[in-house]
Amino acid sequence: MIRLLLVNEFRLMCNVLASVLEDESDIEIVGITTNVEDALSQASESDVMLVSTRLPNNGALRLTRAVNEAELPVRVLILGLADTEAEVIEFVEAGASGYVLQDDSVDNLLSNIRAAYNGEALVSPGIAGALMARVSELAQLFATVDGTVAEVVDFTPREREIMQLLAEDMTNQEIADFLVIEVGTVKNHVHNILEKLGVSSRHEAAAYWALMSQR
Amino acid sequence: MQSQRIILANDQRLLREMFRRVIKKIPDFKVVGEIADLGELPRMIERLEPQWVLVSLNQDGKLPQALCSLLADYPKVRLLAMDADGSEVKIKWVETHEEDLKDLSLGALVEALRSQSPWELSVQS
Image (tube, rainbow over all chains, first blue to last red; front, side, top):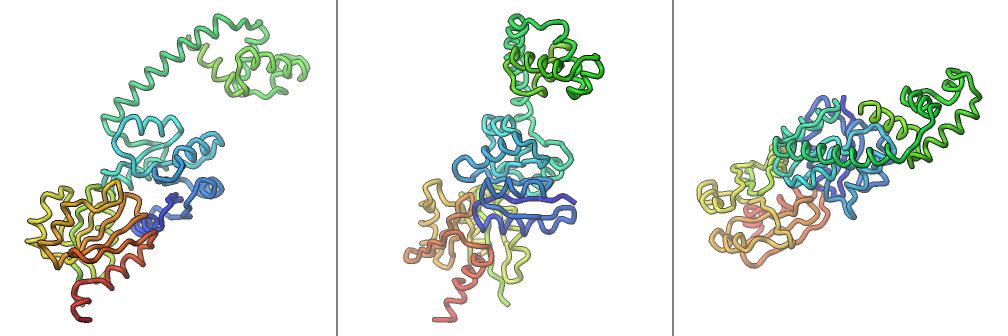
C-alpha cells in the first residue's frame, strides 16, 4: 500500500484529488496538508508526497529541498508543472522524484505515484534529453572544479589511506582499529581532510574520494 | 431525477479528467462532452444542450471574453469557471449574474451547482 500525503493549499483541489485517488486499491491517502511545515512534520508517515507547484512563496521548491536536506525517505512528486524543461530540472535538482504535468492524464498521475514509490521516474523524451544534457553539463563543471581541487589539495599518504576507509563507510573507531592508531589521531586526520577539501561532512569527503578513485 | 448535463471545456487535461471522474460519482450530474479547444464549444453546446460548461479562468482571474459573449447566444447555459488551483471559482449566466466563490470544498461546489441549476430556478419562478 502506497501511503500518500497531499500537499495543496486549496480545499477544492484536495477534495478532487482525494476523490480520484481513493478509488485506487493500492493507494491510501494518509494526510492532507496546506503548507510546508505541516508537510514536513507528516513526511515520515508517508511514502509519497504529492505537492502542488502552486504552494505560495515557492513552497513546492522549498519543501522539496527541505525533504532532501533532511534525508527523509519520502518521495516528492510535483503536481501541476507546465511542460517547461527549466522548471522540471529545477525541481529535479532540488530532489524531486518525479513530476506530473498539467496536461498529463489521470492515468499518468497514477503511474507517476507508483513509479515514485518504486524509486523510478517517468519522463517524456523531451525532458529526458534535457536531463541528460544537464548531467553532462554538471559532469564537465565538476571535472573542472575537481581538477582544480586535486591540484591544490596536498594529502599525506595517511590522509589518503583514511579517505579510502571513510569511503568504505568505516567509523573513526573502526579506522583506528584497522590502522592500529588512537581514535583521537583518526579524528585529527578526518578534521584535516575536511578542512583541506572545504567540505563539512565525512560523507562528502567519501564522495570526493570515490570520484577521485575513478579518475 | 433529472441529470444536470455538463461539458468540460478546461484546457488542462489533468484537471479535466479529474473532474470527469469526480462528476461520474455524483448521481444527478452527467458529463456529456469534453473539449480542450474552446473554438469547438458553440458547436458542442448546440449539439449536447448542457446546463453547465466547466472552463478555466484567465491568468488575471477573469472569464475569457469569448465565453461571456457565448452566454448571450445560449442563455440557458451557465459557466462554472475556475483557476488552475481551484482557489477561485466563478459562476456566471447571461449578462446579469456572476458569483465569486472562494476556497470552496467539493461538497460546497456541488451544492452551488445544484442550487443554481437552470431547471431548479424555473421551478422556483
